[in-house]
Length: 455
Image (cartoon, rainbow, N blue to C red; front, side, top):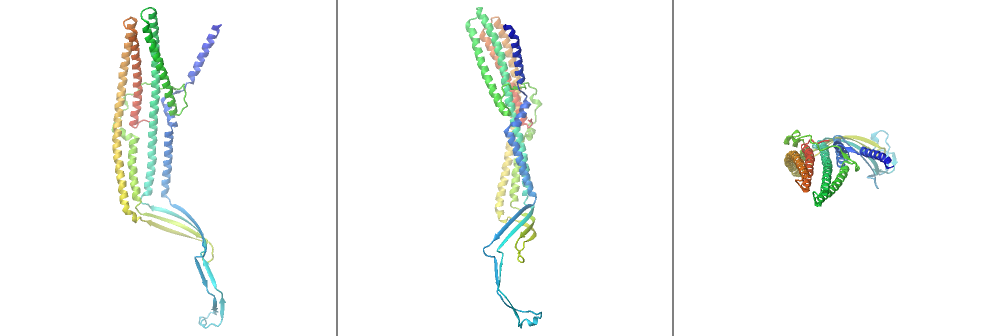
């Protein structure tokens, strides 16, 4: 009866395993870098900074156009501003002959007349002023606004580069841990074979029980190492998932391997040219340019301002008929800040000093960038050579294990020598894995510091 259920059970297990295998999410390095760039909040903020800088640029551009303003005012006084009383009296009757006026005998009486003017009024005015010259501040302000856009573009590139570098470091770190886990599994299988051989030898009376215990202790150590390694892989995968903006998935598989496809000389670049390509260097130059533009703005504050304008005025009070009336005007204005010239010389000198400080900082930091490029190149070469050394060491360790295995079978060496040889092989393979992953990271670091690392 039991045999009837064995075959269906095997099929079910195989089918379940196939489903789990298909459910595994595989991600290449390029996939992860794209997700990191899309989901990273620092990069999102950098893009928003660019949009904000563009709005500042548009705002600065409006300085070229006329400034239109409207003013409205209404007032009412307790007493009229103009009050006048014309006394009454008799006026001679005029018959058209001027000669008769001095001796007129007929008169017409008129009463006193009181006049009250400007007790209330409503006034509205609209003016448009076109600046003709503002000390160069409008042009300089627009250049500063454009510089702000360029600076934020460079910062976005730097943010992307930093995020991509972090992505590669975490990616290859997880790949390295998984490679070490595979090496550990191989070591465990070899040790299981040694344990079986030791057990058979003990039963045959060829070795004592202490030798078997040595193998058993080593197996326990490997189980603990595997547990720590698996936990490390889980934590690293969780951190990596958060970095690229994915929910943690225990079935996540990284598709790329630690295959070395490029040697250092394939990516070499002259250090001086590399520095010029870097966004950091461009930002240093823009910093100097910004200080120069700030100096121009300060100078512009003490230069004359010239403008022309037109205006229209409406007021609802008229001396003759108390009806609303309107008027238009054209005007020109010149503003010369004479009293500010004394302090201007000191303010401008201050700006000139800041310009020189920016140039000094640019020169100093450019030299540091050059040193960074050279350091990255040296480390890349060292990492590449370390792989060759690690490969040779692994080959020697494999040969050592083979010799010890043969000698153990022939009874020439004891179990401790066999375990030690196996441990050395595991260590050298782990060192090779570290050397390969280290080279991968040094490679992208060198590409970054030479201004060539992009998605």
